[in-house]
Length: 248
Image (cartoon, rainbow, N blue to C red; front, top):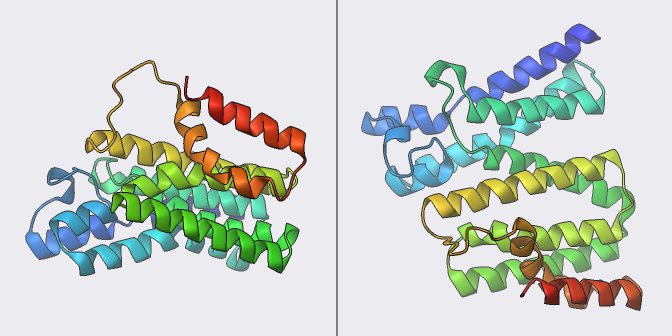
């Protein structure tokens, strides 16, 4: 069993280290994707500097990396769920630190996103009714559409959308190791997306003393009407006060 666990983690890292962004750009343009554009091996950089089709191929495989690691661990090596998810995390590390190109790869967001979709599916089906899942999806779809129509830039989606998703999960789903894992994935994607926006100068912070919780709580305030449907007045009032205080 210990050997299977170590093998799962190693396979996850190797799957994650395979970089279509690097190889496709080398093949199509003869250059290192990490030396052009935003200087990292990721889907967005490929789309900006190589083309849409290579970006689609890159994004498709990057999203599947963690899921493949989990599938192999569970179905072939028959490990526990905890070890399987650890293999997925290893895929994220492999994507960020591929051994054969100087441990400098992508951001890991696409890999984490694929794992997040899978984990969200499992946790919501286990704890929420189909009707509530449908209402949540409709609300989140509205939020995504509103943010995109206001900005016309997908980079803003993660920063504004993910805090709302965390709020919904914490309100509706009892705490468990799986929920903690989902929240950690969301936090990772949020942090990497915020850093990326600052690097490409889409997000400018004039006050360097700004607190991260204030950045997160403001867009989360959009979830206020929906929270009122599922909680009591005390919790709702506390949430409103917290959102209000974030503006000072």
